[in-house]
Length: 521
Image (cartoon, rainbow, N blue to C red; front, side, top):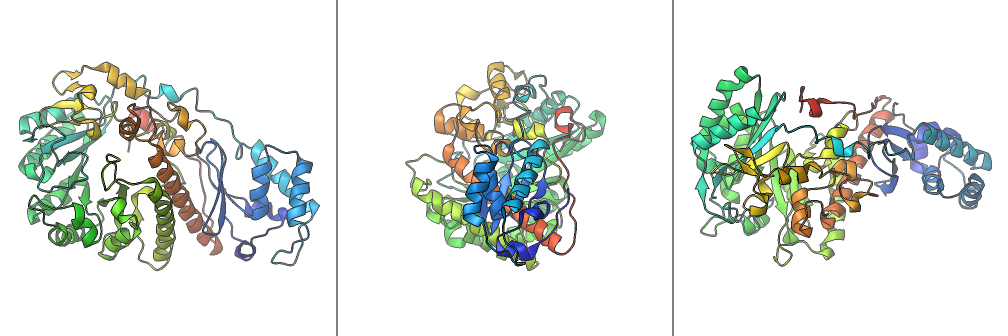
């Protein structure tokens, strides 16, 4: 399908049904469960069940789709004639019964073509994706269980993960890399995150481990991709040069405005970090060129206007941005509240609209949670299975213990084994194998489940005591982010169409790379 533009009638908000092929525009074929209709930034958007089709429609089609499955054709026509009959469009024509029946026929055709009200074709296979594979593709190396900052909201308890402080030795890290290779099967691309605590407090070992990985890549036909996550305190020219040479990605921690950042991100003496880290980050990104990076912040109850922090970081020259909601004990003063929820949702809408505006002005930026591909991916394997924690992805402590991911480190119930003996607690692995978009009863009728893959297992666990539980607060935020992300794509495609540029939109989900490891991203 291609996009076409009809800006004059779009402004009027009323279209003739005979123009249905113009005003129901197929933006994407992919996978979105159930019908979800919403209005945002002047667009009427319809997301289809399981086909993944996204349609931009006028008011008439929007209302008709909402009634389509519950009422007869005559009942729908009667209701819409009462509402729209005789109304004039921008070209001076009026809405008639004939127009409405033509609109109905077009919607019926979309249904027949399985672009609306499509059946679920994934339920029977959802549990099979992880069953036959024990391959590991990524490790989070906790090279430092210590930190030179003292952020009160830190889930890792200032880098110690509620345990002893410690640094990973080269020998332990080397064995972790060998363990990854031994358990990666046919996968070529292997991901390794340097994490903590603050990994730069063990920078020499990080360098040694990368050198070792590079020395064995060709022998085993592997490609290591390293990520460094840092609070910035330990950044030097050497760190910048090394990371920009060896790291596929870097994650730089900044919470935004000086007063916001320095409220929580303080050193052991209680001094704020903003003035020390921002110039280093700017130099880091300047030298990094077109290589991947993210400025990652955390918003709390004390900065529910977090869009101002995102805009501040963009104004500092950072173009790859992420801002995550804090996850902490509800009794913590920084914890997000129910009263914050509508404010946060509005903030995400403000962010989306500002991103469209800035992009038009040639000063756009990327927001991590709005990065969706409407032209080809991710494949259905990823959309159902999620991040792969506990199966394809594991965290390694400084002492070589294995956990499902960094958010489970230190919890004895989720100790999976170690890098010498491998996964000995197979029950945990099996539990995570069945943790997917279809594993949670609360997700059954959620339109976003194949975007979030059922949500974060750690968040579900901390909220409910089960990895198959649901952190509903996070679900609310995720759904709003997806609405905004899709709206941005709609706006981009409509603007191109208005310029006479046809944008082909092709179905995604056919890639099998994630399951096979071939060219897997």
